[in-house]
Image 1: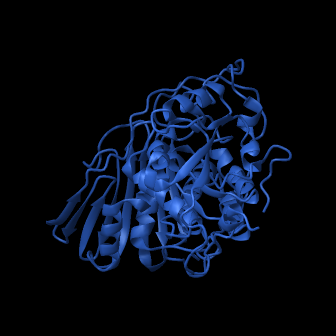
Image 2: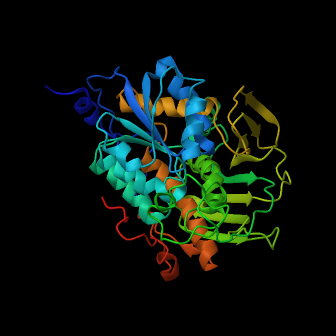
Image 3: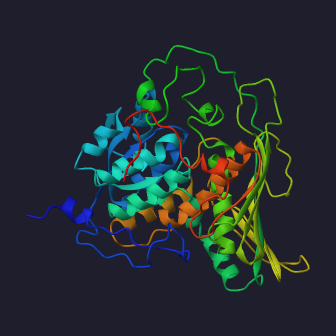
Length: 447
């Protein structure tokens, strides 16, 4: 007898959004096939129970989602226990607690995994999940570098899995509306976008060798990354700023979102040139090891430009619109859009149309979640069932992700470079040395 799980395994990755002509990562445009069992309950696991966990309470608990949470998985005992207590307020059953994501992947009852682990686990963990027959919702950034970016797309195609990145503004109703208007000529021809993020993060402790915290599986936390001794403050959140072993800096941490909206609005693929000015500007004696201030410029065919203005530790509101957003300039007008509103102006700057939502999606505060995240996760669930197209399919999302990698590479080698608009390859020997990373022995992701 054909099992329910076999029905689910037949789900196709499909394609959604605009595919980039000639892109090495683009997939053929095709519709999702409706599958038998499209209304069945999905068995879901969450791997990584840190600050992003709040984004998943509602989409999992809602009756219309029709999912069952089978596992809460994290390498830190206290995180597992806290997550279980928190979920008790939302569901009336008890999911299993697990330390090792590999055991979750080995369970044939699990249909889909939400991968909310640290950055260095996103691609390796997601590929392992696909190889185990699971569909994957992978938080941003979906990859650590360009090599992982390609591998993730190849794996989704090879294993015929539904894979969505957590760039949740792709499921924001007012954002979808204004992007469609831009594409239909509301501001003429869009030629430039400025994506920005502003925060006033404080100093972080200097790393010091320390005992591994009680309950933490440090070996498994490191996973694919090269091995080193544990240092204080690393595992919880500050791994974002402690060198390049685990994180993708602020461009990957937050820039992914606004850069994705900018590329979506301009309807472009890979850039042809990337140039960056990035430095550590604040609290020079603290433990922050990455840049905390970045200005990046990406040039595209047809003289289109995307600029990224990232200020991690200076809260000055440059654009007068709060901590994050995207401005799109066109030949006949402009648009500002963020997670809560959009504003359309004509060429003279007169406001033509505004739309403000009641969205409660988090902005710059640590943690996250809200109605847009809920919609985005539900879109993933429905795509797994064959009832919807993904709003952020990995083949398209990975192209936005590439801009983050180009920015980080340019900051690390200290210069800009040209890029092949068809393949995404960088025309710089030193840049290409950072195309991939070093892995712990036996942890290299393979497709």
